[in-house]
Amino acid sequence: AQSVTQLGSHVSVSEGALVLLRCNYSSSVPPYLFWYVQYPNQGLQLLLKYTSAATLVKGINGFEAEFKKSETSFHLTKPSAHMRDAAEYFCAVSAFGNEKLTFGTGTRLTIIP
Amino acid sequence: NAGVTQTPKFQVLKTGQSMTLQCAQDMNHNSMYWYRQDPGMGLRLIYYSASEGTTDKGEVPNGYNVSRLNKREFSLRLESAAPSQTSVYFCASSQMDRDQETQYFGPGTRLLVL
Image (cartoon, rainbow over all chains, first blue to last red; front, top):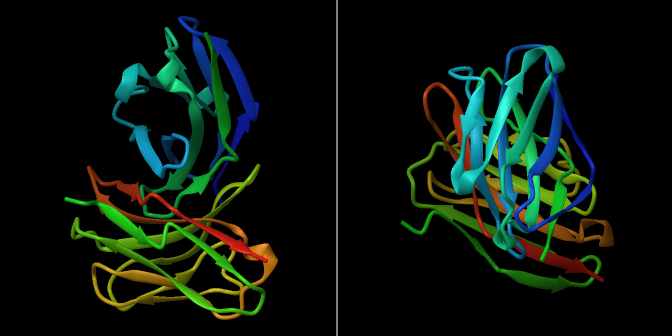
């Protein structure tokens, strides 16, 4: 079985500051990992995904995530936050790259002007 | 391409009423899903369909039924709505991309059961 834990249901950062959203996973098999973003009153949009090709994954809007097997982590980062990054972010895991995703509980990111 | 579309966008029901949430995708994807999103709980899978003609239960299927009408459409039915089914419902479809499925989501349906 797979699961993900997102540490911090709410994160606030100042505009221009580093964004760090934490995700730890548990999986009995090599995982496939995803980050999705949800803007207010919208559906989820894929930010990036880890497919075992490279441990550092670059996504849209300047976000990236690093897969660390030793720490069972897949934290999402962005060097400089923008106001438009305010949203809820979800980490998700699937096994064998199949279709069933297990989501974390989400982290709401607030950007302080 | 419209991607994944859902109707209605918002619905209010009384306890015991029934309704069907509609979902359609125009990306020729084989797999489709229904999730519910509740505060502090992330997204939980209700049902999914790996291909036309097949459906399987997810994590929280009780109180719901689904129909994979054809490759494009996947509907979710509440036969007798309960206040516990107040939620935001998302439909998704997926395609294989470099040996892995990537899911694409619709805009959601907000359901309030009184």
